[in-house]
Amino acid sequence: MIRKRGGKYVVLSEKTGRSFGAYDTRTEAEKRLRQIEVFKHLKAKGGGASRRRPA
Image (cartoon, rainbow, N blue to C red; front, side, top):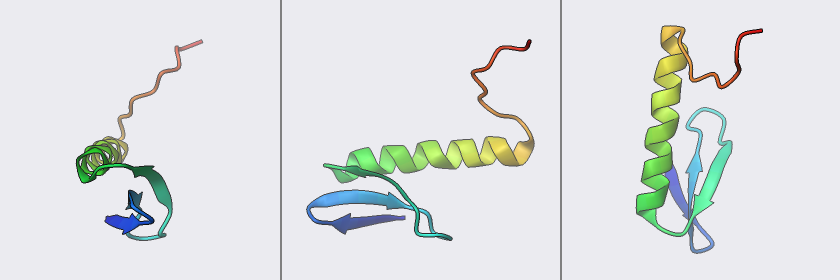
């Protein structure tokens, strides 16, 4: 969810209220929220965007 706080748009977790960043524009906040949704979907499928190389 996106809330406006102190002149910034803050991306928050709907379940915990955890902040995922504050942005100057609503467009930037919406972009970040979409990124979070993509990673949440990947995690649910069992995949992920791991940047680690196999040993």
